[in-house]
Structures are given as structure tokens and as C-alpha cells.
Length: 292
Ligand code: ATR
View 1 (cartoon, rainbow, N blue to C red):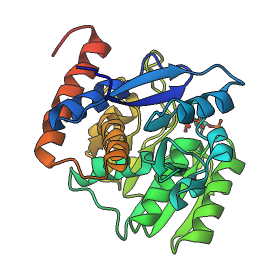
View 2: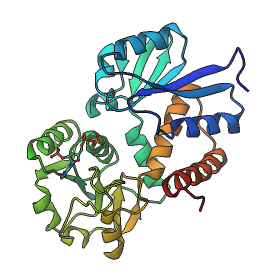
View 3: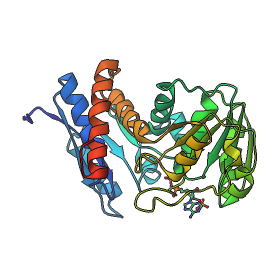
């Protein structure tokens, strides 16, 4: 029940109506008996500064930020966490005293989704398809968790090079950048991340690779897309014998991490598992129009 004391959290972005964040945060709060509510705020282009001032004036206790404001919000904040600065995107605003600090929880969400399935990156050769914001978060995660070589392959080569420069200058990892056409016929990658929007609903026939030689040596393939559950890329990877992981748990765990930053406590594993199961049902219901 929402009362006069209920703390308000929210999401700013545009669009936000399709977001699963209210479902995840409100189910975590309910499971843990925390008196909070989480709502979405669609913010019109040009109104980001006003929205940020409004958040502070109204005493909103924490905010998630999504497309298209993950980069622009950084200029407003009192501080930005080191990983978020490297990624160049903030998705979570946290009060530290009177100051508001920006974090990026996408890369932690991705890491937790791998860890849960026993996938490690230490000493491994990683290929990242795409060079947008999600690719940046993936590259920072792979570098932080010990990948020995990271290749970024992208349609626009300069964007791949910008990421490998950043990672190579910051972490002790070897890097290379190439075209997708080159990457798809190269062997030696052990873990492959698909971070482009190709294959996402409703254009589910899309796939960034046409040749699948790169899958021959890989044992894990990850697609950050969660709708459909199995993209063309993941289907090809499964047929090549890879363990496949979609973006569903990444989405869940980026929210869990934001929740933890706001509440200053780890979400217990049993609560996490229960809420994750409910979340998967909710996604399936929305994706298929029916409950599995
Ligand atoms: P996000 O923040 O989700 O990563 P983004 O920053 O818009 O989204 O990045 C989209 C990625 O998908 C980019 O790597 C983009 O390639 P370019 O950098 O060359 O634009 C890739 N992408 C999108 N549509 C594509 C297409 N039709 N073919 C190949 N790559 C595509």
C-alpha cells in the first residue's frame, strides 16, 4: 500500500511505457517488505534538466535513466562512478548525502547473468559484435573480469576502434578491432557477445553474422537481446554447440544492482530467485501474449 511515507523511485527516458523496471523493483520491494514504489516518467527531449531538478525538488530517492539520456545526464550529476565514466553512460542515480552520483549497472547485470551459469572470462578470448553503448558496457566488463584478448567487430570500424583504444589504454588486455565480415570467418574466439539490435523483435530474421566459422571455437554465445528469447544468432550458436545466454537475466540483474545501490544491501539469493522467476513469466506473457 502506498502511504504518505512511501519512498518514490523511478525511471526517466523516452519511451518508458514498455519498461520492465517497475515490475522488477516493485516485486523486490514487496518481497523484502520495503516501503517504496517505482514508477516511470516519460521525459520529452529538451526537458532532461527540468526532470533532474524535479527529481531533487520532489524528494525522489533514486532514479534509473534510459535511452536517450544515459549520456546526457552525466553533465548534470555531482559525480560519476569510474566504470560508468569509461562506458560513457549512466543508468542509475544514487544519493550520497546531498550529492547525486551516477552509476552504470548494465555491465554488472551482464556479469551476474554469466556468473550464475558458471561462465568465467579469466584468460579467455572474447569477440564483441557491435560497438554501441551495450558493446562498451560489455567490453568494460570483459576487461575487468580478466579476458586476455577482446576483439570488437562493427559495421562502422571507427566505433570499434574507439572502444578498443579505451579498453587497451585502461586495462591489461590485448585488443583488436575489425569488420563483422572479418570476424565471422575467424576462429579462436571462446566467448562471443552479440550487442547489436539485429534480430530484435519485430525484425527477428536479422542477424549480424552470415558466416558462422567464428562459432567453431566458441563455447559460450551471449545475445543481449531478450525478445525473442532465442535470436537467429543464438540459434546458430546453439547449433554450433555453444552454451547460449540471452539478455533476460542481464536486464533483471542490472535492476537488482540499482536496487542494492539505493537500499545499501545485497538482495538475498532466495528473493532474487523468486523475483527472477516471476520476471521471466511476466516477460513471456508480454512477448507471447500468453503465460508459458
Ligand atoms: P546500444 O546502446 O543498444 O548498443 P547503439 O549505440 O545504437 O545501441 O548501437 C547499435 C549497434 O548495432 C552498433 O554497433 C551498430 O553498428 P554501427 O556502429 O555501424 O551503426 C549496430 N547496428 C545497428 N544496425 C545495424 C545493421 N543493420 N547492420 C550492422 N550493424 C548494425
